Image 1 (cartoon, rainbow, N blue to C red):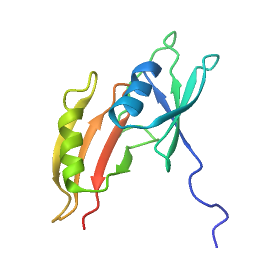
Image 2: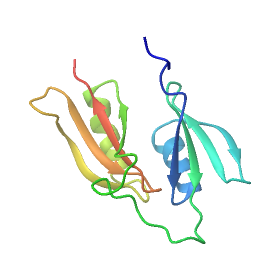
Image 3: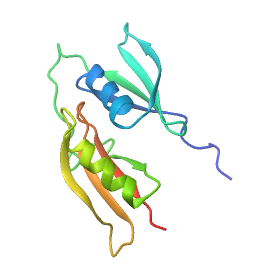
Image 4: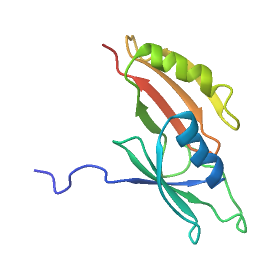
Length: 133
C-alpha cells in the first residue's frame, strides 16, 4: 500500500505570472483561487488539478527548461473529454498570445488517442490529451 494519496498540487515556475495566469484562466477556463504578490505566486485549478504558479526572479540569470538535459518537469499532461473539444481548443490556443504550438492534435501511437503539445506563455510545456472512447 502506498504511503501517499496522489498529487495535492504541482508548483510551476513561470516567466511571467500574469501571462501564465491569464492562459490557465482565460484559455483553459480554470479558476484562480489565490494570489500572493509577496512571493509572487498564484493558484489555479480546473476542479481536479491544482497548480501554483511561481514567478521566476528576473534579477537572476533565467534559463529556459530543456527537457533533454535538465532534471525536472518534462511536461504537464492535461486530459480533455472529447476529440472535438481537443480540436476546438487547439484552434483557439494556436492564436492565444504567447502560446507556442509544438504540434497540433495528432494520433498518439496507433490511436484512437490524440494529443498535442504546446508551451504556455510562461514557458511550461503542456500536453493536451484525449484518451479515446
